[in-house]
Image 1 (cartoon, rainbow, N blue to C red):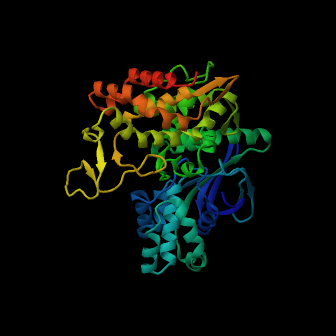
Image 2 (cartoon, rainbow, N blue to C red; image 1 turned 120 degrees about the horizontal axis):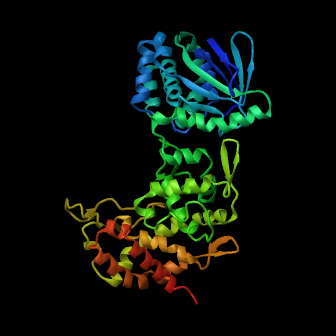
Image 3 (cartoon, one colour; image 1 turned 180 degrees about the horizontal axis):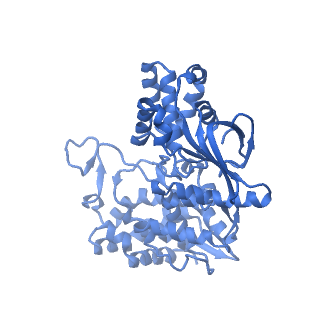
Length: 447
């Protein structure tokens, strides 16, 4: 939560005090929800709230049947590190850890209510123009704050209640520990019907903290770390690439033996599952409340190399067509390859009017082709990585290696593409091609 405290007033409520977590349930007033929106962020929510059919239907209910809204909606669930009882059915919520405290469930409800209140506060044409640009929760607060004074003017006209549930710890350090351990599981369970991705759950549990810290900040910001957050690059793409250095660890750790090179192409879900298995191990990470912190030095050093691998992926993708043509002219004639040629006057999809880009850094390229062709070469980057004294590091400069050797490697590699009948899926799934690529990389390392 952006603010450390919020005061909530209930129209009516009941409290549950005899369990591991304390809980207050009731119907909150509109002015309380306005204060909640003033303070709220969605850091604790496993999903990013976005505008869609669900938020449209909620706003429709608020407009047409406001007095029945608290019967029709499941409402909002809040976790707070401390809850103080005040007079007149009011409670002061105190938030200390915004990673696990705040809105656990009901983010779409809160977004829809915020949009509904803004529509009431603004002239109709102005509201239609301004609110059209709001697609996700993070876009709401700046507009909300800009028109906050107008909201105060009309809040007395709003006649609806919102189901609200607050969970908070029992007194004492043991109660706080129980609360921290339970919050993530509660959030997962409440969001189960939203089909949370494994990546979202893992990110929430802290499994991806080291990955996110290791990435170039430009790419980290474009990752989809939460369901619906609109990131351009899926978290599983980063996790899959992390297995390239992780595979060099010569230790008995969970998930390592079960991993197969082709997973980085055709089973990113399995990359995620095995990474989660690795991170859940007490030998690799330590639990700190609701999250796990990576402690294993070899795993830490492996993930640190992830800062280079997306750029190396793009470098291989960019150089692959020309290196292929040097070995066997005709790369552009493959059925699955498209060529950028804005001057070509034809409707043939073979020729692109819009220039294609590389996957991660969006660099301009002349060819668009499936990444199955290059995945064995990307995997072979592992041969440029050494494991010594429990630490993972590059043994040579990987950028120089690719620039100096890709054309030579392609003289052998292009034959495997031909044997796979120029089918990128066959290339990307063939274990023997991954092994050949590794042999080619390994054979060109300095002696």
